[in-house]
Length: 519
Image (cartoon, rainbow, N blue to C red; front, side, top):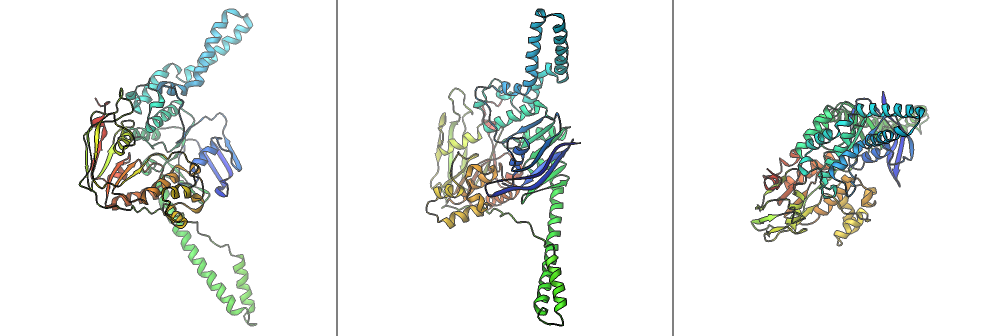
């Protein structure tokens, strides 16, 4: 049975086409992975099927009485809510029914017999619904999911505005899972989640009975949870049965087959054109030449799919620094003296080291990086920086800007010519249309490539990277991994993907050792 039907979908932004006559269907129980390079329109597709965006053309039809739950990578939580309030809001429809039930109970002593019978009937219906949806175990459910995603450790009475990006993602995810929709729509759910909770989510989705659509660039995660792949490329959407590895196998085989057919046809076209050119003027062979010309005219010419530019990252290296890069002395990090994020931290990094910082969300990984860089002041303690340091910093998110990509890079490197700016952005895998677009309309992955463009074009001997793989597609992630391996400078990296950093780093620092939450 089809839960969702999308027919003849066409959509674009300005002169940039995203979809061209795309069709899609979701069947009951399907676990779908929506994959494709950055900027192919995955999040746009989610916005269209959830009704947040109206397509230029096409029809989106949901089956009757289907509830869809959407985890948006850019969703925000309201100020003033506690974690418990946010999680309990998943049950708002049921809480409203309970309120109505209380109103009915208050009225029963004031109405005549006929009205009482009607109210009693409504009361019975509401009670049945509440019982069916396990309303009376809400608190236990909230606690169970909160424990699974590590929210209990934070305290359910904590204000959501005090949470880190990863912690907010966990709250939104927990709320969505508590809602138990008929279909889950998940946009990059593993971004900002630590390893332990990615494992829990993986197990949850493996056992999930209903359908879901998942956008993710985390290939091991995709492989373990999906059974259908929809691939977005060149304004098309193609369906493949199996996990990501199976899709890749079939995709590469089809691509090789098409390229072979293209080469064969081009050879045939070349031979036919040559024959026509040599024989059309001669009376004896003119009819044969015309016959071949007709064959050429009728030929359905094979066109190869447009290849997206693959990113190339080569970090510019500055002069060699001193042996000691930085050293912390009893460094206590945080934003509030009354609620520090860490015990005193004593760490030292030396030239040539490549170090990964790991630990659960909210433990202070990003805060530590900002304290080392002097962006925020520590609560106490000191940071001693070494000599001849040329630091390059990659932030998780980009501050809001009205600049185009071109202007954003030009602002950073005013000495560059227009050709140099365009070339720098193109090397990061951005097309001309992306380069001339405003940064804010780009996808998360394309924005990350703009930030990487700034980083690779400045001379550095110490790279400080905060979750650089978030939002990046497979090609960009692989290229970044290669570039960091080849980089002769030092690297300090916050990352939740061991398969990414394990081949790069020489050492791992677990910040949980310094956490005030650690028992």
